[in-house]
Image (cartoon, rainbow, N blue to C red):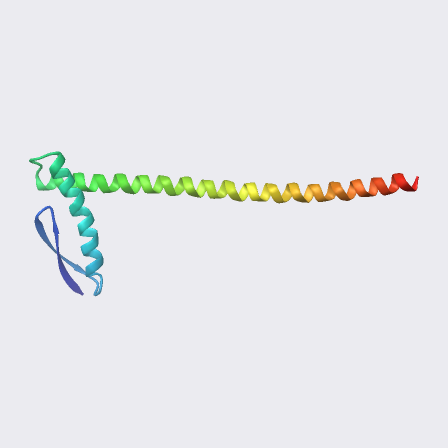
Length: 111
């Protein structure tokens, strides 16, 4: 098990992790650190706990927005699939109508 130290809002946090995950944790900590700095800049005098609370809220808000965007894209893709299916059905019906029209024309010619 590896150990690394994360710096968030000016405070050092020793953390244990699986070997090789240190860089990933450092990256995550940098995301939290940016949000913590943003909270401190927008509201000077925040306690450490409130700074981390606001950082977590900022990150949760971004995550929520991304989830809504992903759901919207999935719905658009699903509608695209429905459109494709409808187009195939219409093409199939058009082909059947052409065959029927050809048969009726041939029958009229024979009569």
